[in-house]
Length: 364
Image (cartoon, rainbow, N blue to C red):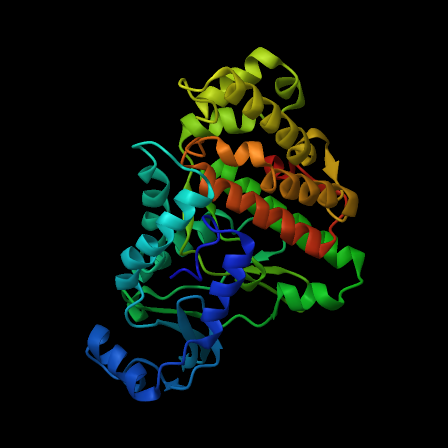
């Protein structure tokens, strides 16, 4: 399960644990058949017209098989045994490392780990994933150049998901060779609209934006997959979070400090040095990170912008003063909202998308 969670460990740890996803041996055909028998009381060939019991791809916590039914090509995702049961033990292993690394103190520090644990448990619930997938695909089906597979509840269970097989190449494969700016812009606008519509209209967002969850069709349309990790955005977090994306609010010192308290970045028990340090730190961070929201269009191919983000992150990660201060600050909702935006920005930069209309979602 540690290979799934990118929010609580540094990148070096994430990369090591991520290798585990590719070293997990595939489920053998007899075990695949046994899984169907356990959850459906039937063999795969009783549910589908044809079924390949050898996996064709690996997912984060399972593997994918090909099947056919009524002339439709299907993808069948089967979860590895024991994944859900390992969550508590995995987090117990990570918690003391994270507590020490980020200097997290205070009796309410468990809220961050409970947030992560809750999301990991949700990701193992394939019934919930099917419901969320259908909800998002129906709500966002009107967004141009965005496609979703159809999901089949009658052929899905707690540990098995059946959906349309979608023809396309992974986003990372596409960006590795693409030099067609029009395609990059089309895909980038679809991706940006998809996330902005979810965040601002649905107040619920696909909180795992990485290249493996997106395919590119032959017509340069974006195919969105895997809705196991969805983050609901409470209104009392949404309001101050996006109020601080506006430049006039960032430059208004009194308003800015008030919102930092609402977002739990500043604490009532902070001393003068802590309050000053974190106010200045977040002013610098937000002044840079929110730049795409300060204009009608933005160039996500701008290497200088992303270079500044990288430099800022590295500078604060090495800041000895920061390491001495209590890291138990910030709403628990930051974990998956920040994960969403960092992932989204990285995908937009990989695409080298230009002239992206920031508020285009309002017209859809």
